[in-house]
Image 1 (spheres, rainbow, N blue to C red):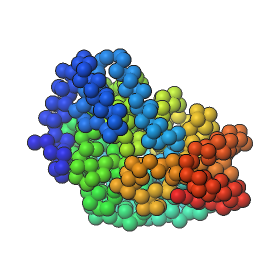
Image 2 (spheres, rainbow, N blue to C red; image 1 turned 60 degrees about the horizontal axis):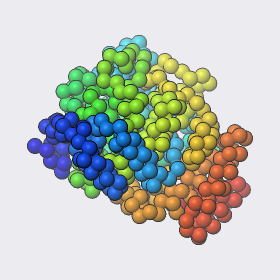
Image 3 (cartoon, rainbow, N blue to C red; image 1 turned 30 degrees about the vertical axis):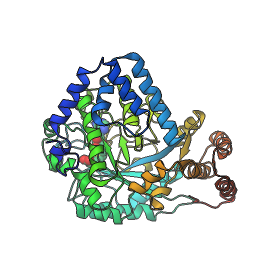
Image 4 (cartoon, rainbow, N blue to C red; image 1 turned 135 degrees about the vertical axis):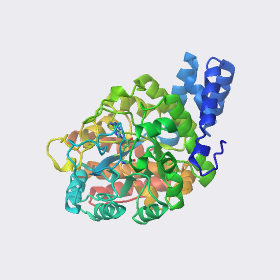
Length: 471
Ligand code: SAM
């Protein structure tokens, strides 16, 4: 029985409810009156329930589909302005005991090189990332209780936060590791992590079990209920995602929104972020065997619909996608992107991009400076801000900030000041020139006069060597 408040996976992602939503969507895909009503509700910017959003996903009326994209762009601009938060993944270990059919780290892959970073190697990786200008990382590891126990992850987080190099420091570590216990989530919280990220891969239970034939990840309920345990452990910023291309996208879309509704219903706070990965070619993985791949066009529509369905949730797109796809999705809802990523263990310390321990092929292989310059030319403000969780604005406190319209007096200045740090310390002369101009122009868009004065003063101080200002 469907119950968004239930703590049981099969009740908050109730299969019958997903199927009924898909049926409703199929039956109404030409129902212009109903679809227009839903679109009008979306314009109130309070989000959409999964069933209505799924109806828009199925909508086959061109005009309405165009309006969906337009509305998503507007909501994106209204809620997130032109700021794009930057991050990089850091792979700690590719040892893994699971059997995920889409991932080259699966246990049966005997020819991929296995590697686990020592604390010394982590320091070197972090220095390489700092030298690019990164301030925010997402750590990644396979699931292996012997090689990558929670103690290893915790020690690694401590190491990352401890490294100081020139003006560089990592100020926020997000964590993408396998589902674990409440006890371990408490430990991660104590270690000072930002968001706990866990992709559901697929919400379709049967497919999930087929795609994860062996290892602890096989357990659908344990995996699906992980965010509840994370919340119980005190982590109130959690990141959802499905691996698009594995299961039928309609099913994933409806269920992903049901998961978001569940977190809101059960804990009073929705997901902090939603990631949109698509399956990629990798060591012994051919993405074409998963015949549910989705076109760029459809991917864009899904992105737009997530944006209008959960306006308060950040959206992430990684370097799995090309520059062109990323550019399109930025305009439709994405608020956070990675840059200069290497998906191999120890990859950042190497001169050339290594492939022997890589998790998947990266499509966008540009340097961080190129990505920053590209964003600025598109009129975006690349933001290296990490202020919210450091100021205790997590979970519902973060949501309150979003809903209070104070973003322009808070996130906007923080983005400008952290970008200024970037231009002073890391940018190429060309990027510095255009980014510094943007920063100056954008200070005019800080509404509160007092805040604006402080920002201008801080920008001068940053030029003189001071660092780490934030609201
Ligand atoms: N091992 C952890 C787990 O099981 O959740 C998380 C870390 S894993 C390194 C991060 C994510 O990479 C996975 O959740 C999966 O969605 C994604 N991934 C795995 N194989 C992929 C592939 N071939 N293409 C694109 N993404 C992939």
